Length: 404
Image 1: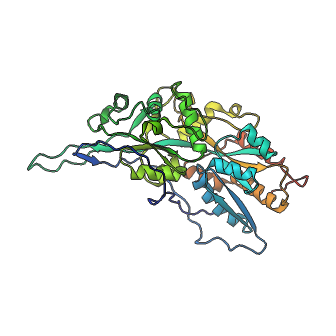
Image 2: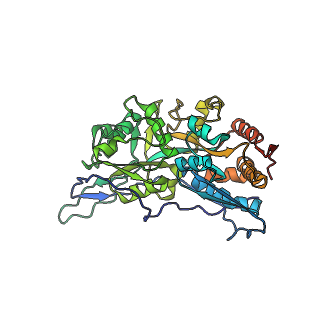
Image 3: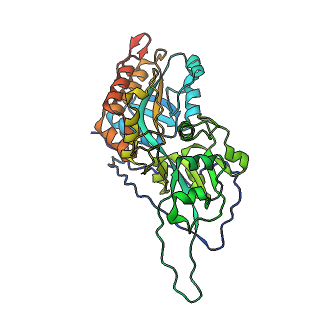
């Protein structure tokens, strides 16, 4: 039975990020009210330390997407109890960095949340993407609300529990297009009548990724699906209208975006859900394509995956699953992939260990449980069998690779 590390906290206040923010205009009576969405994350504690590395152990170097990094951290740790000879060093440098490194053969495998381009396939010669899990991208925020003050001699007002922020698809596009720039804009108030008295005229500081990012690819694919008004495109890096307008700032990695939101009053940004949960950041509900208000959770992610099914995958086993039509579907979802060379690996022992890890991650009940506890969705069985079939075609020095 695999044993797991306790939940890992991924963002520190000291994380560096790029700042180019506009000033705000909060009123003198403004107070910060912390809104909390409680998402229960539990994890079975493992031993204090994994088994020491054995002589002749296999060191595997990998990296790329930050989107699945919380889960991969747990999986790599746990796999050392399955095979103590394996140590995987994964560097969360973003999907773009992962792609570049696997093409240059400086990583043994890479993580990405966005598809390889035709040029990537040409340069990499024998690359294949393997979907591993799905997760949700959420909009997290840090609003400094206007709160009532007590009159002279009156008792201090009691704490006010405010409803969660709700955004519709067009409003989210308009925020990132710098069309909606104030928290009390009518577009925001219309979907948040319970917050009308508390939203100020403060400028919205809009946070986005500063690095090439699969999370950005998922998010901008969603914006593209939400409205024809989004013209910056769907890619791992785009020119942000909010930067041109002067109210945008960049953060490196999901961790950098989360840190920027934590440290910037009246800000809003997009992150993989675990980064919001791990840092106790609230995240907005969305009005989805069916016109229903939905919260990001396991059920709404599963609904979105079901909207597209196996037919959503193209011939390269890549799928875009944003803006599903189901009444309960979360509209900003995506798969995360591992990328391997399929015929050019020459260290067959290492190749076997990589495939053994991937097979374990896809089939072990403990690995699946840990994914669910961290907010990720494992592949439905039909998807998983397709991926396992593709892994069975990997060769090393012309011979099939045996996962071991």
